[in-house]
Image 1 (cartoon, rainbow, N blue to C red):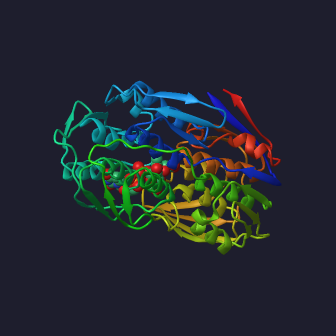
Image 2 (tube, protein in one colour):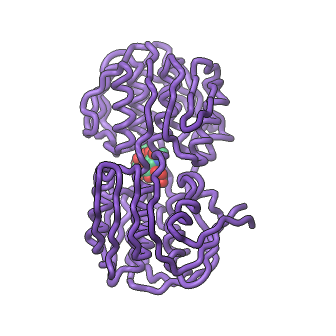
Image 3 (cartoon, rainbow, N blue to C red):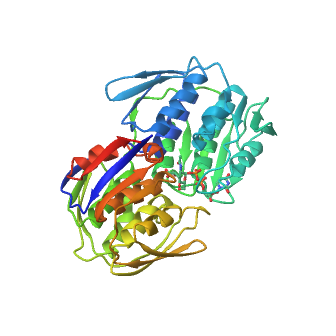
Length: 420
Ligand code: EPZ
């Protein structure tokens, strides 16, 4: 297995190009199941999760043609409707094929995603909504067996909790349904907005895009003509590199980024003493000479994202004072804490609240990545730790960060990928 070796203490300088958003790419790839034509997608990030979903589509009979800076997905050859355990167990976002396959073929079998490191992550809201739309859902031998013999029909759906992939799944199911589906308490993440915008341009009438109430008028089974599009920038990758600038007291410029998607993250960094120069597609961070402590509560977009919690927890170890970080979305998203404590961080946990005392000098050592965003928190800590840090099990990192070590090396970090 690969591991990253990082020498601290570092200061960085230069420009990092942000890749396409993993969490936009996944529903957009699933969306191609609704298409009557070959769909060209530009700016897909080169990360493992994207390859996993493309493999899943290939297993179902689709064809994926890789081009210079794009991919062409042809689902006109789709012949299977079963997403098997071997793939789904490696990526729970595979559940995103459920809505589109059911809408297009009238039946679908998807392995239950099973457990996840950061929390239970049920999919009950996805299934309940599909049943309201006319689907019959059975759980048999670890598989979701969904059928809609009379097709899916529009209805009013109220999500008990805001669910990102749940909203995406139902939007895609509603796209081919008969009539209008209203989703109340819909997710408003930029990744969901882009999915709606592209469907809206492809013949599906969607009103309320970007708000918590969506009205989707389906095509009643008519497949969609989907034109070429480019995936929006990855706001979590961008936020991670902004934290790299803040934690190493370095000025960094990010390009191909949309600052409008990072409002709550930039606001927290400003509270900590950083300032920014922002243009239409770039952000330059001017670091604080002394970082101030911060209080953070993770919530749904546009509030502070849970996917940035681990990175800010690492950053808070370098702030002068006591920071309080509350995780409200997932019940087990503090696994990076014990690894940071091994590097010398002064963090105490009380339920879903972490109290971080700074500024603490961190020391390099062997640490283990436990999940995607925890991995990036350990990278940030290693950049400011005295000495050498080896980060093991970085297959977690490779799921969602495109060429992280190359991008950091490009701005002066001493970071290499080695084999165990
Ligand atoms: C998406 O996961 C993201 N993944 C996650 O990013 C992100 O952390 C999460 O949204 C929250 O922003 C993708 O988009 C591929 P949810 P998702 O459904 O959709 C509960 C990363 O690091 N819930 O919005 O699976 C659930 O338990 C990943 O890139 C139900 O109870 O998350 C959680 O507490 C990690 N029943 C809350 O809702 C359901 O049926 C939000 O989950 C669905 C969700």
